[in-house]
Image (spheres, rainbow, N blue to C red):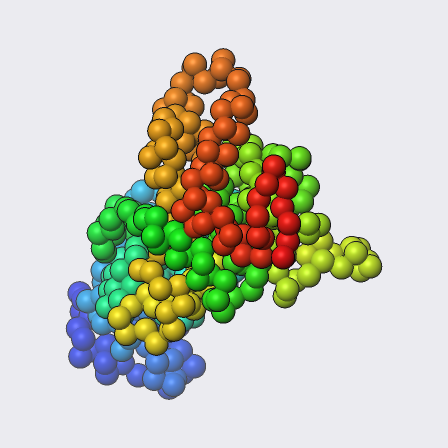
Length: 428
């Protein structure tokens, strides 16, 4: 039922006073713009038009929720769409369908973590950061509803609680998640965090243990409250100079005589790497089969069907092990069992590299020992130079072992090892 208005344009008062005793009544102003009035008193703005020879009815919104002026804007916008060859009703229906299919943040984080597990070895840290800082804030919101200001508030809160580096990490992880949403999942949205600057400046870590701290670390580690495998792993980082994540996930299958062969799949730079194992390193590795530093929470079970290979400790466990025995803030109530200034597992790797430089090793050799990607490795010369440098690596690692044993004193070198003679070890 349509009723033509006697006026050129509706007024707000006229719309407000519209009533009907029928089930519904359409009041048409002209140019397809009208107001549908229901017996309940509800009023809805609409636009009727033809597109591809078919009549269309577009709901512009309910009066009271939107104003007459807003309804006119929507009417004008819809007419412009038609002039551009776009059906506004089809566009609206498509948008509503996409809206229903757009995931909530809580669900999308789970999806993104599955992707990160395959693409990023640090996925566990990403998962912890997103679930601790993003999901509680945005979990029930659609991913397309998040804007730049939302993240700025989260980052500010993280920084204010004394975690500026974590704020930077959350920005990086969240930005990558939204890139995944747009580029991989095809969610239609403008990336809200492109070119967003880190909220806090970061200085590259420079912490290096001096010789007195190395000796204190090695000696005091034995009295710390942490599992023996973690103690051995921390010492092995210093002995070998390798990455904590690669050390903690070491597997017996990677050890071939005097060499530890880190496969490309576990290497940070996706390049295989061979590490010479000194006498001290071999004792720290021990005789364990499977994962050398196996987690007691996920032990191997050869009798299970299928057999369970077990899991190693997580890299974060090393950091927590240090924090549990060394105050990392003035307010910390943790007992100082290590009795040296705070350090991280990676600082032990940096300490080894620094000591190697003091021994006179070249930067090139240090890069080879620590599997760094350098300009040398990216050059054509590196492609043709396939020499393994095995002899040089062995000499360098044995030279470092001799200096390390001299620093910590031979009797305390391995905790439960009393002497090293002719490359043989005797356990006490």
